[in-house]
Length: 208
Image 1: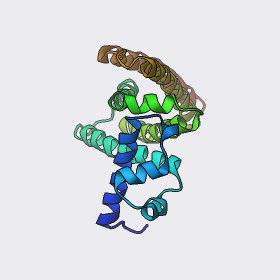
Image 2 (image 1 turned 180 degrees about the vertical axis):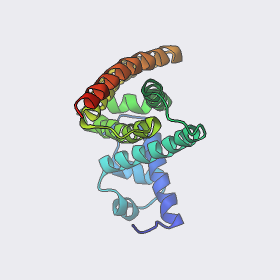
Image 3 (image 1 turned 45 degrees about the horizontal axis):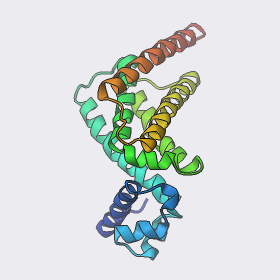
């Protein structure tokens, strides 16, 4: 893969920032590709050289931001040099996602309130694409097919809960969930997930 020049990296970062800035102001369906590249301060040709359309810009912006923030979290986890329990790994992974939602809750609210499922599905897919490998890394174990299905199920349920919260937030911006409630929900989900995960792993061990 060709290494991007410093100038190109700066332009792509500006486009990423523009997506987040614009989503803080209005719903995604009201944002155009022209809005994005003008806010980013780049020309039309540069935008379309690296993005097919505004949906592609959305996907790349959130993926880039997530990769950057996950790398920071991974660096913290690496300092322990110890594999985590399934319960703790699941909890910290979900808590990271919850905090990510919290930091960008206005942007998520404007995605959820947009017509159609594609904008928010793009972001949820980016979240899961990062969550799954980091969870596997934290527990020091490759996941079998049954565990993969379970992670999809739990993560999907988690995102559904947050979608409901974002819809409420869109209607009433002052009505936000407390951090304690979020942590409690993450802990509850992770405990249930851990029990199911161990059950599947034990079953897998008995059949081999």
